[in-house]
Image 1 (tube, rainbow, N blue to C red):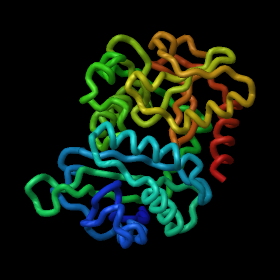
Image 2 (image 1 turned 90 degrees about the vertical axis):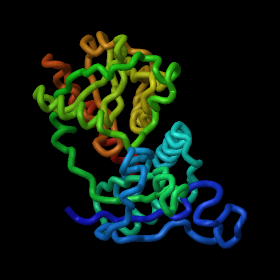
Image 3 (image 1 turned 120 degrees about the horizontal axis):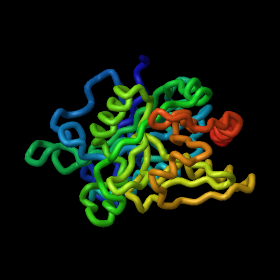
Image 4 (image 1 turned 120 degrees about the vertical axis):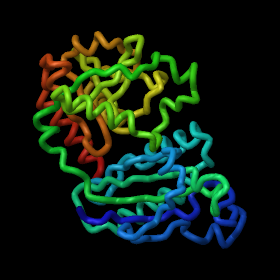
Length: 307
């Protein structure tokens, strides 16, 4: 696998960083990031992002050199940081760092550009108290077959009520954190069941999200996605899909969906930045309607809006 293009973000948050402040003319005149060699060691083994998963990230899809949803990703990045009580990201620096990573990477049809912000080095160690931050760009995995043929999905209970984000905010539902062990375990469970992916449900029977995607459900001319108030990530790709559907007169809404509604749906999709729109053709062993034409239209729109 080719080495990713790596940008170390040296001024990642608003306020004091590396001994500089936003009022410092020298600090404001610097880009706030540097190009680095991803093949060399760059991260401390004492970094809390490694030892505790204490940090946040975003992955931005870049199509033919353009990032169509960068502002939405940056906004969600800042929201995740706030939920973890991390310092506020300097979004102007992060935007420039993403663009610099795109420019520095060899031409590729689709890039996945990951932004990472951690709490930094463990307390008591040299360098503690300063966030660690970087941007890495690499060629995206090819999901063409999944877009064309669809995927098999199983539902799994996430183990929380639908209102856990309100009742227990310390569980960090709705934040895109580096703690992805549960999501990875869920995907392994799906594979054990002969499936490709997962749709999480709440312990009281509401549809949530997939480990790395939003859920889209169609009933007639109405398209629905679970509401962010359920403690799930607001989908940037889902937002762009809704914009497309509204142009063609479809009804769209973000609501509480019962798990039982999945089985009655005319069609289902998982939506994510890099994979884009992938139809669910089998749910818990039962066939789901596959609208091949609309799936292709959705992906054409998502790809074209990146150029």
